Amino acid sequence: MVNYLQSLIKVNNLADLQPDYPVGTLVLTDSQAVVDECKLRNIPVAAYEHDDVTGLKCQHILLDVDDVDDEEFENIYRRYKDIPWDIATTDRTIIREFAMTDLDDLVALYEKPGMTEYMEPLFEYEEEKAYEENYIEYIYKLYGFGMWLIYDRMTKELIGRAGIEVRDTCTVDKQAEMGFCITSDRWRQGLAYEVCSKIVQVARDDYGLTSLIARCDPDNIASRKLLEKLGFKFLYYQEDGDCRYFMEIC
Image (cartoon, rainbow, N blue to C red; front, side):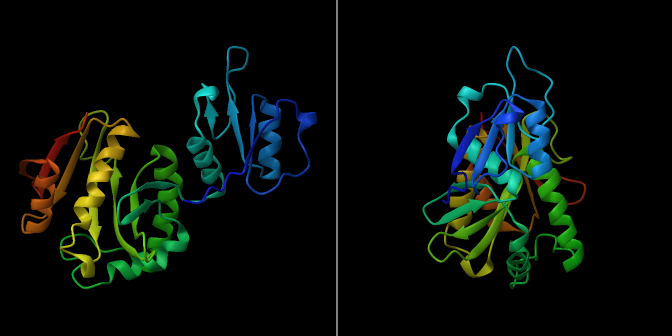
């Protein structure tokens, strides 16, 4: 995994803010004036509050700055620079966020034979582009998770999509819906189980979720068997005909 953040610089006085910083620098401050100036100069910045300073306005505000690890600072920098987060790896895959540069690969994935037999296709290109731009801005940045891309670790080829989302199907706090698909030319290789097992772990350990739900077409026997193998329990058939599954992960 590439580390884009190269240096973390604490600046609490506006006079100490340098006119320019190397690429890979994140400014950390408890000064609203420094935050505002960094925004004007497009300098990546995170604010931290403490007993003497509260009420700061910044995209990223930290309360226990001493407990923030390197990965979180890395992700703050990436979010500021619109660089997709790395979510996890498995033996054969890399799981990471979608970036707009992935759009053509995503379209090609969905155009493969059988991919939309049991799931909705993408929108038309320009509409999908607008949808994904909004998804990055309002889903990734709001929840910190969403639908992710699955890449082959060896070939770097896009081979699927999977993730967790808070949707109207979720009925309790700390619950998300899991979805997944693997490119049709890589079916029956155990990849979906490998990826989804990791996502269940990430949902619990990294995001503090306590339960997951999943939906699939009743005729999609492969997906139903996969959900049961993962530990999901069948609940009922929804009014739209989909099967509803549930799993506690706490």
